[in-house]
Amino acid sequence: MKKLVVLGAGYGGMRVLHRLLPNQLPSDIEIVLVDRAPYHSLKTEFYALAAGTISDHHVRVTFPEHERLSVKYGEVSKVEMDEKVVHFEDGSTLSFDDLIIGLGCEDKYHDIPGAEEYTYSIQTINKSRKAYQALNDLPANKVVAIVGGGLSGVEIASELRESRPDLTIKLFDRGNIILSSFPERLSKYVQNWFETHGVEVVNGSNITRVEENTLYNHDEPVHCDVIVWTAGIQPNKVVRELDVEKDGQGRVVLTKQHNIPGHENIYVVGDCASLPHAPSAQLAEGQAEQIVQVLLKRWNGEAPPEEFPAIKLKGVLGSLGRKHGFGLVNERPLTGRVARLLKSGILWMYKYHNG
Ligand SMILES: Cc1cc2nc3c(=O)[nH]c(=O)nc-3n(C[C@H](O)[C@H](O)[C@H](O)COP(=O)(O)OP(=O)(O)OC[C@H]3O[C@@H](n4cnc5c(N)ncnc54)[C@H](O)[C@@H]3O)c2cc1C
Image 1 (spheres, protein in one colour):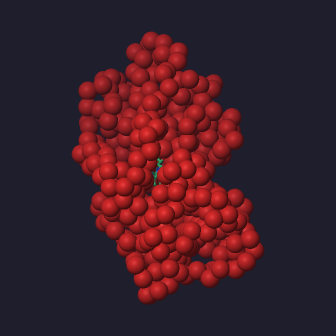
Image 2 (cartoon, helix red, strand yellow):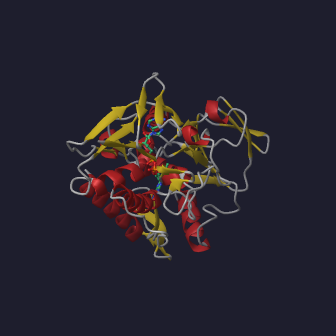
Image 3 (tube, helix red, strand yellow):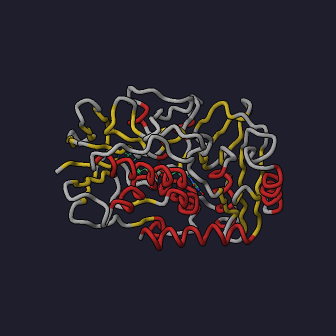
């Protein structure tokens, strides 16, 4: 038996499993799925978990079952590529013949003093639960700061607005207008939504330091009872520590077949992979589809495709609470209830097909 080890049951890892199982897995291959959690976590919904508008159960999906799929739970600490061994924090190890690294990303704090220590995160389910506890335990009329006006910052600020109308919510964003990477029409729509729903957007902000209950914007202290960090991401620490070529964002540079150059048996999927798009769940899934094609060819002793067509992304959708949304679908800006319904529909479909 040859062993394929999949590190991370995220969007990339799960798509690999769902494409290989139940029928495509060659009879001489077994799979070991590795994750710290005993379920696939719907990271795209962590903002709602933290805001307290959905239950924990709502963001969990069970792993598929198959006689040649086993699961190892644990915290991966290191990958030794030449030795073909994965190390875990508890001292255990796992050998592999083929490896897919899909460990996702973590917060990036840009060396801002105190940011990591004094802010809450929504990058893992566990951290989102802690954010939920802190946000929902707040007494009436307290102040919450969200740092970072990208998609996840916008989603948690709006969701929290609906969950806790009593709170003062301040959204600190570097740009002159929120969601600066989106078309202006969408940015204006979102900024207007915040104005009419009483969320204070602090444009042109520059967070220079964080202390307990205090955020320094351009070195000016702002009192906050809870601070949530959504101001940047970087690949998982295990990947950051790999001695391989990385791009400007620290993502691993890969061959066209998505393996690490010089290591035909080690693939990187999702947020840790250097791809010509911003990281997203859709991108991780599209790349996973291509990795499966490569694996099947190589297992069969055939050459994999020399090149793949560009991964097609359908767009991006964000929510503004339960009833409104915004996004780009096939490059067309979409706002309002239709955008929100579409987002809910996509989530429903995802859970239906993966649950
Ligand atoms: C609030 C929010 C909203 C988002 N909204 C969207 C959206 O609308 N659309 C979209 O396309 N993308 C969205 N994204 C981005 C999307 O979630 C990621 O791009 C996607 O999850 C990446 O998939 P992945 O397979 O690379 O890793 P992930 O899905 O992050 O999975 C990584 C897995 O690895 C496990 N893991 C990590 N480290 C270890 C370790 N050391 N040991 C063991 N296990 C480990 C984790 O438990 C997890 O299961 C959003 C992200 C956030 C935070």
